[in-house]
Image (cartoon, rainbow, N blue to C red):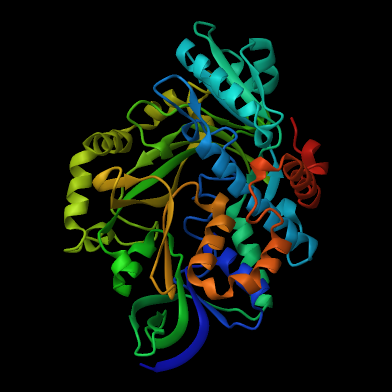
Length: 500
């Protein structure tokens, strides 16, 4: 058993979209820094970032109803939608920069234009959707949004959903044509190919077993390769981007910021259409409203997706439960994440979320026929033989003590936990995740490298023109950015390519 030692400037744990994005940003800012990546699987983008595991494929808050909440006075709060849309614009600008500089090629391999629709049924929901439309369509970020409750118009927009539908209750939809479908699995692999060409050392089949501080403030990682050999790697900065696996590694780091935090795993199941005739009749992402009591990650949607440059159709997600934190993880992940410092937090969360637990158990017990019934709320004449079940990736929702929610609050979102000295950062949580990867990684850079920000800012602004600027207060900039990113990423010309 060898015990090799090496030293590097930056270590990224996990070869998903987050590490790919952070590595690419750092290579542009400081090309001379040495970066090493450890991934326990044999390829990049195989867990949460993989196209079959990832439900979030271009979250710009154009159609996700859970990002626009109705206040008690009936008004619609669109602040979260604005925030997510602005964050997605940062990703689009960064990808455009990479394409313009010829650092990555063929954007159509990972991004395609696709209308985004929200669809609701029932009088109360139609009233909500109309108010949401009025609140958003006045906003420059959501320009071009249309609303209709006319069955003829809806038949043009979403024929598969409207045909053969009994007209016994009101139905309405909003549509915006500037949406996209992003294949984050493909993008992750493209970015890792780019990093490899920049001499980033990517070590697959390498698991990080442990980490500790050294006397000079560096981190020493104990890494095991697939032959069982142990290597020790020291670095000044560690990023833990291992999806569900991040929580265990954060706990091993021993930093005080990582205490009193737990994780609750939720798995997802999608239905995938296997009938090309049905797939050809739908060309959009259509989001509905979550059922009462359902968690935000269970908003039903019928999505056109482009996977391996082929059009697919997915419906879901149905929630599931597994005690694993990663799809390829161990069923003991949940148990081993319980520590003396987070036990009370986890127990409090359990007591508060009995309804969620009940909901997940019910979801796990659903037969295929029951799932088909839910699909028929979207496609009235859906046939069971046209659809297969696919198990998606694991999401680990963060549980922590918050001022607003008290002990053991279940968080739905993405969060960066970093040490006070900025020497280590871990990414926890789930949606909107991948879509906001550029924003999240810029936050990591700002938190962990404050001493370099002044020197790096001009380069960041070159890569991302709207960095540090509120797009909302600069409508001309929104138009300029959206026009140039659409051109660079091939979204304007490709628009007719796959239309039905």
